[in-house]
Amino acid sequence: MRVLVAMSGGVDSSVAAAVLAEAGHDVVGATLKLWGGVSDSGCCSVADVDDARRVAEQLGLDHHVFNFTDAFEESVVTPYVADHAAGRTPNPCIECNRSIKFGMLLDRTTRLGFDALATGHHARVVGRRDGVGGDAGWGDGVRGDGLTLRRGTDKKKDQSYVLSMLSERDLARVIFPVGELTKAEVRGRAAAVGLRTADKPDSQDVCFIHSGRGRRDFLADRIELHGAELVEAGSGDVVGRVPVVELVTVGQRRGLGVAVDGRRRYALHVDVPARRITVGRSEEAVCRHVAVDRITWVGAGLARGDRAFGQTSAHGSATPCTWEGDAVAFDEPQALVAPGQTVALYDAGDPDAVLGAATATGSAPA
Image 1 (tube, one colour):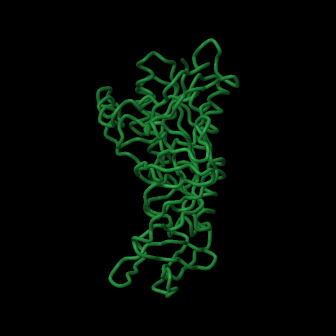
Image 2: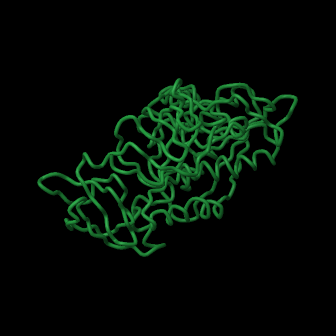
Image 3: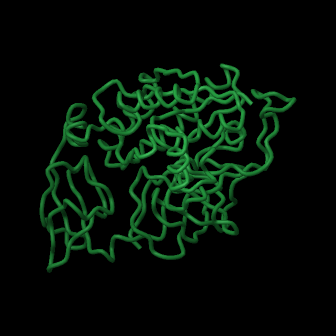
């Protein structure tokens, strides 16, 4: 099978390429140039591109760099800034997966005649693939009926949440070679082969935000930032101020610098136009009901009233809920979900299986 491997310069994608090459597949590496500005983290730095190139060279693979900077700016960076300006909390990694890695790159993979696209994500695709590496070929007629996206074997490194927007058709065209491995096994394989990325730390930051400048400086270059009042829920009393309302997230406690009656306050609602943040006690910063839009399904999807597990952050836990068509109703109170964040839905009878994803538009305190 001819496979294009998205090589970010990290250990996971390096081992993904190595595993496929060892299995005898025709493997070519590709690294995406996504950000034209200054970067020192994630998959956008010069060092990461160089690491990917050297790993490919070590494995005897051809390696290419695809320049997607304009598309990344349009599909990821511009919406990221717009969300902050509107008081939402964006998830740029999910948007990058949606529009770039499993959008443009997947389309290019097809056009270049590859049978599949592989990445280093910790997730698994389970089921029968029609048309991938078989007589039917791979292209417009590819099918993925019955394919499921499942959590990676290493639950601590599981990345199914950030892939939850993928469809069965997408799953029929992608491979996650390290999904069955723990992180320790990935690093062990990298060390055994002598890959330069074997001990490389995982990236933790938004790739286009320079660690020396941070979100505030990044946003200040693109939009006007504003201070805001902190207003106590219920009484309406002004209890403090923040210097930049555009940086405050619903559910946030740190950085607000306010306590009433000796108790810290949480952001319950962010109103950028009014320059006002409503704050409340910890017991007020919870919800049961999350309104959503931008709904996608892996397969057929849920009907109103169906049961599922919902997960509201990459490292959070999936908890029982009911699908209401345009909202998710949790059985138990959850931390407030900021508008703009993804709610991933998992099968009620098989909580490792992803059903789909939606974007939160709001969550009312329980």
